[in-house]
Length: 333
Image (cartoon, rainbow, N blue to C red; front, side):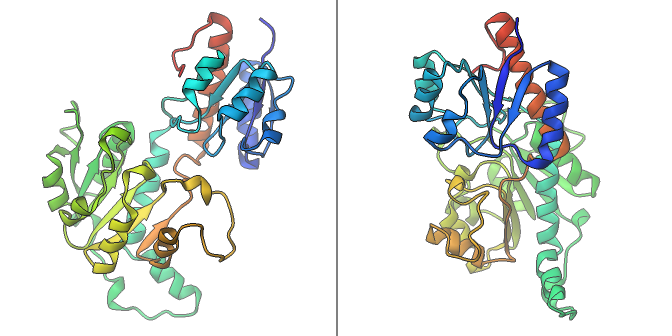
């Protein structure tokens, strides 16, 4: 087996050392570029490579897959859990081998969710912003409830949801959780309850469930109406889970105490771009950011940590070697 040549798209400067170290470890010949796969020109960059490694906001659509096929690219892998940016049926039709990363450090997303919740619970964005303008007055909006006196609801009890529960438990909070499947081995951290009960008792709700198109949105007007008045909502999972109009209504009515989002539906239109205070493409997004500091938005940085990046790269490179050696891969798409 010769050395596999891989083009890695969308690599940030801080990620380069991890790519270099992992390539040496797995004996791959890689080239890293900052460009995302989103045009015919960027797809043509793969000439001479055996495979490409993409990320979210890289689009392996019909046009780009056709180019890869013409360039004799055998592998189109993503270093993400999500696969929506790949036209999977068409890739299979072309005979291109595809793979993904089924999981990476759950702490990365869990810690972000907790950080968002704490910022809202202690009104830190509001307070620090005022201080940055020389206003050091303490007002009634800064008054906070301690986390140990809160009930935290976790929706989705996979790896990420459970780690999030453990972190909040470390603060002394009472934890309740809900999942479509009953989970074992969690009784010492949380109590599993039905969704309606979780919504009614939780001061903070953190959403970590997958998006299943057939089931539709989870965070709806009805969902929010069942939440405890003044509760905080955090979504570091999938943007498709939420109805932004319902969230905005919940904030404006005062029913929601605060909302933090690391994800948006159609987020590729704005994430990783600088609009420099110019209006965003959708009115609902403009309305959402106008509600700061009760609404906090981060540009999908849940996995932007040292450990998560290392996991994603290592597993991706393992996928290349497994396919090359055996013709198959446990993480194939």
